[in-house]
Picture 1 (cartoon, each protein chain N blue to C red):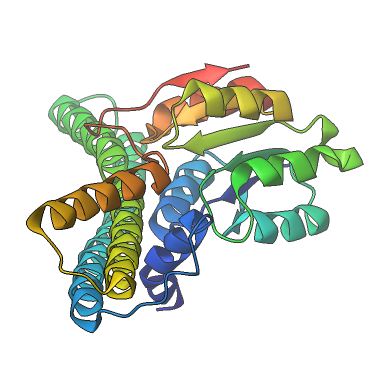
Picture 2: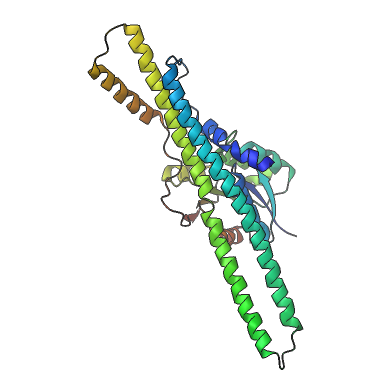
Length: 192
Length: 121
């Protein structure tokens, strides 16, 4: 349970990791815009919690299956030792087949361990996206506040220009992606 | 006597998978949830190898690496980075700070054990 809560808090932790260069002077003033972005952030958090919860459960299941496989493997070895070599050829052949099956299950479990790491990659990407959304929110809020100061008529052009600028700033402020993997194949290894 | 590995990652599922893989191969495992936690545990346990993530709250993996290398006991202890980060700039930083190797996630249990075996025998 503690681990689950810890995993659920990971999104916040990841955001904390990425939350270095934020302009704190952008006081939020447009409640609707802020609420809209908060909803997006909430939904991204929900996706992260669902994925993390599912992955945690799957890891527990796979660990249990692995223990059972190991136990099955040991049992086959014991039976093999007990079986007399003469006259028990069919039993030994059967046990040999059982060993092959047990080895194959172990190999499949190892592949599953590699694939299950998608949860960590997804969490990091979601945290990165959440951060981008937060920055965009702040920049749009800043434009909204500035246009209020100017007290003038907003033209379509200035609105477009403002939004483009906000996206540009958000892009520049957003840190580079922490995850670039496009698939779940094993990553490179380099020893220095 | 089994060798002890300090496994550092803020993801509970990754910690479980690393720990499971290492324990199955006969290693003792000490888990830490971030760099600060790892630094605290590194001072308590006699660790033979550190396997750490990079992006973590409180203290990241690179800062942990730098902090450990300042400690007498950890000057020569192998420190492997296990991370999603694959950029050459990050690798160069890790190398300069004294990392022994760079493993990009997702890891394959068999290959992870091979590398660890190569590094600490």
